[in-house]
Amino acid sequence: MVLGLLKEYGNENRVALLPEAVQSLIGLKAEVLVEQQAGDSAFAPDAEYAEVGAKVVGRSEIFKRADVLLQIQPPAEEDLKTLKKSQVWISAFNPLWDTGLVKSFLEIGVTTFSLDSIPRTTRAQAMDILSSMATVAGYKAVLEAALRLPTFFPMFMTAAGTIRPANVLILGAGVAGLQAVATARKLGAQVYVFDVRSAVKEEVQSLGGRFVEVEGATEDKAAGGYAVEQTEEYKQKQQQAIDQQALKSNVIICTAQIPGRKAPMLVSKETVEKMKPGSVIVDLAASTGGNCELTINNQTISYEGVTIIGESNYPAQMSIDASRMFGKNVLNFMKLIIAEDGSLNLNFQDDIVKGTCITHQGEVYNERVKSVIDNIK
Image (cartoon, rainbow, N blue to C red; front, side):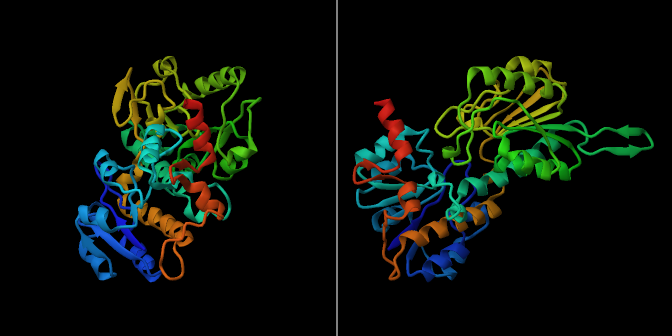
């Protein structure tokens, strides 16, 4: 099997595999082609890839020779024109959201795997890029808020008097939210956390956060640990609870998302208008609409004295460790589809392989994506 590692485009500073991960793949008898300068923004020069046995070549040669094409981002328009039916495309392209891209893959007939669709099972944890990248995002979001906030995070006893600690509200207690709790607490803030899933209360408290409870939430064990759509009655209670806490907060970290749907709107324009001037909102759900009504993806704005940061790709700002974590996840997944002799082995009897596969032979393989595509038709 020939694996082609592609250079990312735009402001993406990560690379899907660092040289250490490439070396492990070569140890599995795979041939690895690396696009020139693919790892530069993650501080991994071409020479390091060559040292571990990879061949550094141009992008066009990779598309000609590779059986498997790998990058973090979805393919660009030019990539779709170059892809061949016989090739396998692996990246993170959010198929529940970007159904247009899924249809393009179907038209080409290419086999695709979306790494953000890996089943949330115990066995698949070592391949879970969402958890890995959410860890980075939660950490960076708090640091960004601390830098932007015109007050201290911790309490200080000074000759000039006592400085009260910052109040931080975190919306969503998934991996990003919990990492944000841990980071904010280490910086000395008082942390309050809201989540519709009561099961995360103990985790929040173990990290030193205070769980904001709202009764009547709908929970679905089949959702794989994700939040689900709530009733209108619950949404009203939820909005009241969040509004009350937001008015006391110096920082709000938004992390709440529902796979395949627009992010729930949790912080209204009216709420922002009532917040303390100088407050900061960091919205990690910006790419799917944001939890704050005023969020603009990839932009930082100021509204009524409140700074609102729409940022959904903080991992790109921590390119070395984010690439290392992503690459380890990819390596563990690749082990499932590489045979002992180094050939490509798409074993669809494996629940992880089947669950991560989005398209194959002109059909949608992932059941959740298939249901979304069928509903659009």
